[in-house]
Picture 1 (cartoon, rainbow, N blue to C red):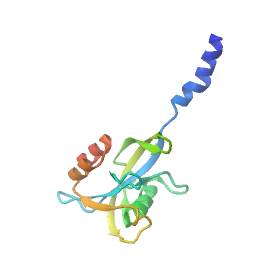
Picture 2: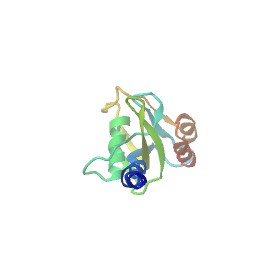
Picture 3: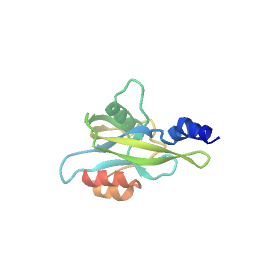
Length: 152
């Protein structure tokens, strides 16, 4: 019996507990360099908390391109330049129906905003605002995202 339980634990239960986190890609949208730099935050659809635009991988797009697509859909960034190298990452627990949550690793790409539109896919579902990176760090909930914003 002991060997059977050990086999079940090693072959099924333990690997399930060690499953890799899901990955999303985020856009840290900014408008200029230097001390006057502002970053663009949006509200989440569910809770209305302040976040950066982010989403799941999109088939056929590289991760910086996915970040740009999310910046368009969630914040109205019609034209932007994403760096090929991410700024960093942060983790958060995505709330799911039924009091479940999913641990998500979010990789963040800086995106220089070249053109912003008021007419974008989620305009009626989100609020957006430009703020200094230090103010943005105060508004978001995720500690690692706060750190990224503070160092940006």
